[in-house]
Image (cartoon, rainbow, N blue to C red; front, top):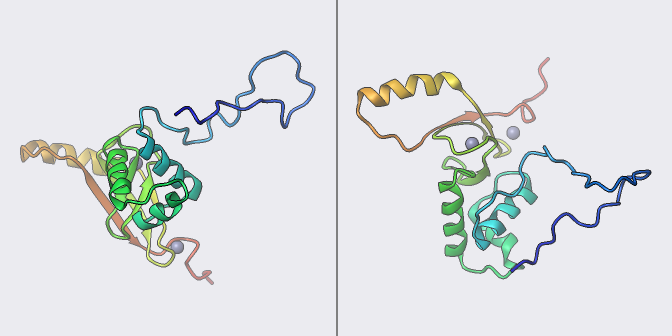
Length: 162
Ligand SMILES: [Zn+2]
Ligand SMILES: [Zn+2]
């Protein structure tokens, strides 16, 4: 409990500042730790943030072993919790978990999945959302999620074009 210190002492990295306010560091640096996570969810979230990329469940488990997490179920449950909170997405195609790059839970998810380096990039595609909603209404279907995984070769993995 309460093992995490807030902020730190400040004073590192800037000088000539004596007006006693808090320097907020990297405030908009994307993913601050979300609120309301369980301990295990926080561990899993931190592991994903540290990796800065998608991780497979066993890779997360590997990373958490030194923190005392040994049961795969613990990791799966935490992943489920994070997914329910809309904080991560599971990419079935490459069986990896990715932190959501958007604000808040969203049901329509579009990913560009590179088959060469097995990375995925989350993108937004308004037109899909716009087309899906009326379709769901017409079909009286209660959609939970719709995920499009476009598979192919990312720009890093493409041979340089002539
Ligand atoms: Zn997302
Ligand atoms: Zn690639």
